[in-house]
Length: 168
Image (cartoon, rainbow, N blue to C red; front, top):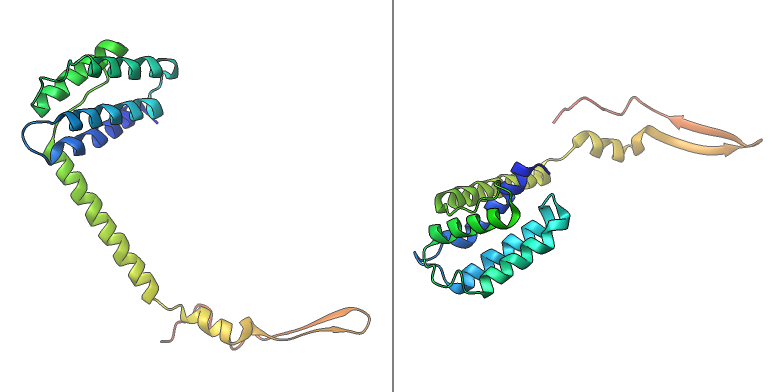
């Protein structure tokens, strides 16, 4: 997974937590955001040897009360970004608050799910008449026998099969 994809995943997971609530962020929401960041870092961060240090640093910052007085989503995102960059020395980290982006992403996923459901229903409604007819005619096999001397006999008739011809 490229770094840009990792950061996009991080961005997509963090934003829903912040998008659909009041203008002030609660302590539970802050804790949830930090826990999600830790999970994302644990599963996606390139420098595996730094993961434990980064997650422990986030826990320390959170338990020290650094984020207690922050009540604004954008400010919380900015402080988290600054802390992640400072701890990791990696300027690619960025936490953002963008409720419109989340709303649009959720709407796209909902539309995609609806399209997939419609396609599944259409697939269920379609009948493969060629396959149905071929099964009905035993795929052209009329007779299969083992004759004397261990000779196999197959009577196969192609004429009744309409493979490739669709006459509905």
